[in-house]
Image 1 (tube, rainbow, N blue to C red):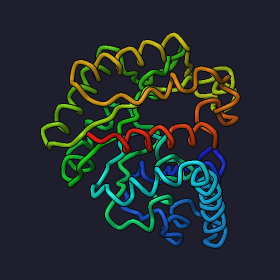
Image 2 (image 1 turned 45 degrees about the vertical axis):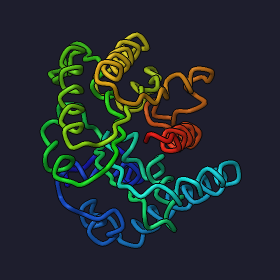
Image 3 (image 1 turned 135 degrees about the horizontal axis):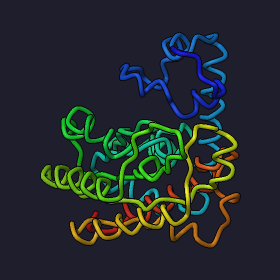
Image 4 (image 1 turned 180 degrees about the vertical axis):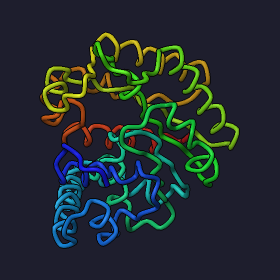
Amino acid sequence: MKESPLSTDFLIQFNLYKRSGLNIHPQDFKRIAKFYNIDEFYCKTLIKKHEEVVNNLVASIKKEHNVLIDNIGSTYNKSIIFIGDSLTSDRESYLNMLRCMFQDYSNIRFIDSAISGDTTFDILKRLYDSVLNIDFDAAFILIGTNDAKIALEGTEHNLISLEEYKRNLKFIIKNIKNKGAKIFILTLPYVNAEKYRGYFKNKMDYSTEKIDQYNHVIKDVAQELNIGLVDIHQKLSGLKTKDYLLEDGIHLNNLGQTIICQSVLQALHKKDT
């Protein structure tokens, strides 16, 4: 693997190896260690650290929502796919919390189809292999943060325009609907642009106005195509970005991920899900 300026723990936490297209299980310590050219024991230690965080978060959520969780686990006999980017591919993500939360319920299955760094265009390119070619009953889509990047002067990065983002979203959703699956789309949290620029130094930027525009598209598409909307942006609106983002200014911390997890639980609890 080409050497990355990001820390090894960052690469491990956000499963950057998935961008290579290699079919490596997230618990395959040996192959992940080889991919990153690190010691296998060190790799396993980092992965276990993130698992422990998830276990602790789930234990806390269960104290408040144990009846809800048991109700879903006892009655929900379905497979659910999660489509997105690093907000979902994170080892401490809401998806991994859900997996941990329902690990004793064999009737409910969670499928990870999220890759860090993905845009809607990236999902289009892998739509058949990693989404449509899989059997599932419901889908949660959280995508758009990378689409909403702003190119600073001098960069040749290919950005996704607002119009292209809307076209891509509609194509993805319509094809999933053709499978007969129930679909939920999530709105985007804000990014702390100053922290993001300082952390990544990649000639890219963000603005709250741009995120607002993309969230407006998400809501319009949800209404037009009659799919479920999970308004994460609204649920975070009473908080400052420092409350729910990591130090890199873009990824969600434990509070942010917990809020998404609880919101997905509420969506799953609806009788028509």
